[in-house]
Amino acid sequence: MSKINMFGLRRVVGVGAITAVAALGLASMGAGNAAAGPLPSGSKVTQGVDGTVVKISRTGEAAYPVPSLANNGAGRAAEVSGLVTVTAGGASGTLTTGYIVGCQVDITGLEGGLNASIDSSLSLGLDGSLSFPLAPGEAAFVPLGTKTFEGGVASVQYKRQGIEVQQCGGYAQARAFTTVQTEGNYVIKSTLYGAPFSLN
Image (cartoon, rainbow, N blue to C red):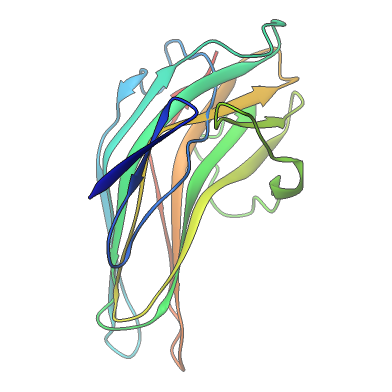
């Protein structure tokens, strides 16, 4: 596995089905459902009606607070890391991973039903951090990477990805999500969620 330095941040580039996400960033974190630092690993197994078994695993996840570049009191920023792997019994499909972020919203039980996406509002700073606006009471998906795979195996790895929330100005939470959807006559769609952590 090779490592490339760009704008002072490290990008980890994998081989084969391993995809690394460019450096991105999230908020200054205090005590929450999970404290800043290493977060629990997790996995989920889903079996389709045709017998295909899809397993999603997340390991090495961590979140660390960093100062907001805006320095205006309303920004929240952190660096997140993790490795997501899927095995799908030889099937083809798509893996998408990222974070659900909420501003003054409890996202502990927030799984299905969140349709908001902020892709169009994302901006990439010169330091590689990902910055976006989020008003109080709002929550949205923040995608870090998508991988189309064949042969039933894929992985996305991100290292010290910066995420910066602007215009929140209050309590904020985030939690990882990874969604896998297979192709074919018997489609399986499965999502693994991570432990929530604070960004205040």
